[in-house]
Image (tube, one colour):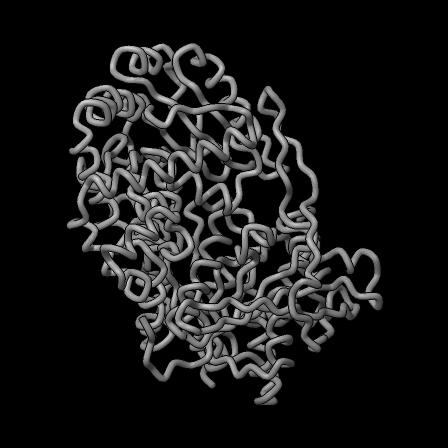
Length: 580
């Protein structure tokens, strides 16, 4: 699919971007989404450039002991494998100039389109040792380190793009980490107009250039920095500019509110998330574009071969995956079994655990955060074991990292290990260490059912289940995020609980066990043809829609090209200085 429009040049800013499995510039879903977005943009010849940080020491490499205790080590890589640009800029940080250079990674689409990605790097001899380490760690350090990184991403990214000669007209902020780029754009306008003071026209001018995608449906998830720290890092002139533009949130620099203040188009990442975000930020119009995944990246080799035979146009136009509904069930089953064996072989090599390819295998792999409730299935271990013994055997594959400072997430991993140990006489479980893109593709394609049970409404979108669907793996999930849109009961998968937001968690748990016992396990073993039909429907109905080709097309039409401005409602205070 090629986008034939007169699109303006777009710059896509993201703190993390998953470029390749072995380049550790990502931590999880946000970075994978960014990478998938750019891969589809390259496929579709959308004129995008991207900016992130180089993260020389990565996120971290996860190590787990037999009790599920997580330990971390740096995941260093050498950006010299990329193309070194000759662009170098100075960024004013805490009153001193910090030198920034950029490495270029080129995303190449299967149609020949390209997207340049610039990774900013401060490891330069003219910088102090502390400044040289500012682009080392993804989500590392304290608030001071993080705010310095966000200044480098937003302001430094703007300057690098200008130094490289990119004539950018639209700036897409993937989450609020890069929101300071809006401050940089405002500085440019004021420098060109010589007006001196911020006027409404200046704010509107920046808004016309900015697009903001918010991913976090809970207030605690939004980056915010106290005023004293913000003044220290930004300096007096930028601090005063924030005040003039009424861009403080009370006495706090809240990066989400900063992005909202300066963006003409704002969207959540699923229809439900858009609704939740409008409740959180009622003075702003917030649209919704549901996330997707890059089909060419996440379809496993056995299904690539299958789709090439039966749906040869699937790469160029993901809508063609709808025709998977006519692929013979035995072909779906055979391709899936091959993917399953590939996963199990890799697990045996890495962990020394031999899983049975004939046994129903549940998959649960994502960031280890408490709201995702990875241990939910073990809450009643006796019931789970009884289902496995009496209805049909079950085995489970887990994966996921907790942030190094997230003690709740680390405790969750330990509870999964404990729960798995308690049911080990009846159910074999394995927790894959150091979950990454490589393991993500193996697990989402190799298990039989994808499980997801977040606390609602805290799942903004979720994309792992979309990857599973592309490979004929149906979801068994709480109705939150994308699954509200993708769920057709007994057709594309199964729900855990209902849609009522006040539903008792005990009722959700009862639904989980009841559907396993009465529907999913009996269908897998007793009605394999019917189970395969669900697998096929997951591809046809979910895989054909929940992809970044569709998602990028929506961004083009709604945000980049025909932008209906999200004007603040009257509750928002006027900008000092009046009309321009």
